[in-house]
Length: 385
Image (cartoon, rainbow, N blue to C red):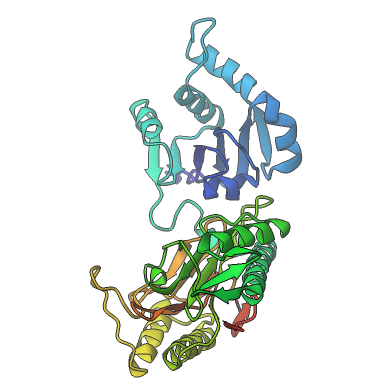
């Protein structure tokens, strides 16, 4: 008896472009949820009438179906009473019948209620595992690398704005005064947002954390910036034009640094350089992270990961980036994956101690044959006179 040919994988979405996998499939910026699916490598979008023209011109769909026509077909199939619209599950079941689809694969972000309704109606729903519905997203195309490079140009513009503000600031009664008012973490974020916007990206949740605030790594920072205080500035803007991100971190200090602060920055910079030397196709992600951990320990910097007393180097060395600011793979101590040509990852070693503050340096690299190339560029000058 001849073997039945395996049905091509069909991925199903009902979301807007805020879902990175939907955006990857469609390359279409949509404000409202809509249906899309694939059959093998062919991509289908179901366009509301008002979006049809824009979807034809802007999206990556191979075939665009008009929602009003799909509604008519579903209404006939399910004998929907006149004056009522078929439900989303009925639309999907109709599409499945039209295209001979018995199984849909969905991401973990797929609406749970909708998935249960489809299963109850007899469709098979498979939830993608850790690799996601598009595991190929981990390898970036040349166009994606260029989009990430542009995101980092927006980050670099933000750092220039920070350096300029610190250089222009004057010390008054233990605080910095810039353009007639106290320079604060909040004001630095405003300047970064403006600079990023001019480069075509939107910087939200930017970190400008002075002193001990930086020890809580995702503390955005608040209040006055003081002279002689380390400031961790982490800028990760998103480009509305294509959905890709920049992600870079630099550390600053206005005034004269102490010997202890200088050594802390110098040590993190050496760890950053060590990671760049080790990140290459075939290398182990976990091994690179552990090498940085070992380097910090040899330099005498203790790490504790107890949530009540975090200090030292207690976070992952880096992460993948693309249509999400944090995506696969993650560089942590137990990572068992290996770097592949075409991946894009960050490397961001850091050290954090209460009473001293924090230092983090982050860049983005693209894996190329034999090594990597930086796709983020900004000066590492941290002491601002």
